[in-house]
Length: 280
Image (cartoon, rainbow, N blue to C red; front, side):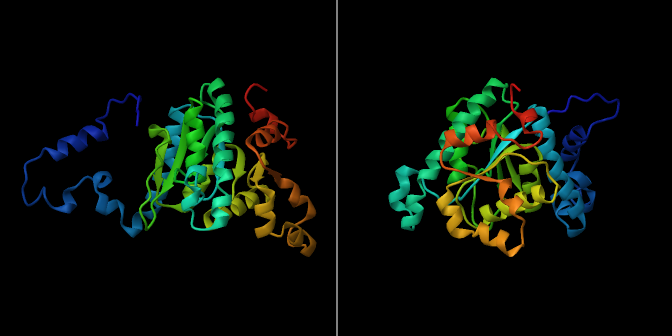
């Protein structure tokens, strides 16, 4: 991470190097002698959770500032959705059929990134969870358009690595789901949700809740695949029951293709949205 600040005080990095070069004695080999900020076992103690939360908040924010990224287009979607080339090995026929959304995510990300490149990769930068499936498709489309894209991975019990299309300098890894989801939304100029499972549903409903309750400004919010979303969520039943208002159903729109999604974002009628569209 770049640090251009000038200070008359000795910097922490220099002291880390110096500390590694001290002679080995029972005292210097003791864990108590390690510099606190360079001591992994100390930083991982339960009491240091507030510090770790702050570090995860700061690292991503500072690096995006350094890359001069002002706004993102967020893609949520299932890690298990295969590419059309791999749909024969999908676990179910439904997953095989949903492979069309891999291609739509890829095409949509490419269209968005063409606009992002025109802004100098500052606006409308594709941001995904950095994994396989729909996430891979989004990062892949961005790379094909010659732009950059962000991947927000998280450490899981089973091995997960960033897909190969995430821009290396914008590949991040998180411990806390809450901080990761916060970063998804902090610079979001639009949110696009593709078919997925528990994780996608979690991201979908948390984002909608923040907008519904006024904790986040209203941005273009698109659900790819009306048939999928109306089969798994009875939106009208929620409104009819009164657990949400009828107006809440206007917080999002259904789209089917990347071209339709881009047009919906560019013509979104929500207050303030036009201010975040490059060139307006």
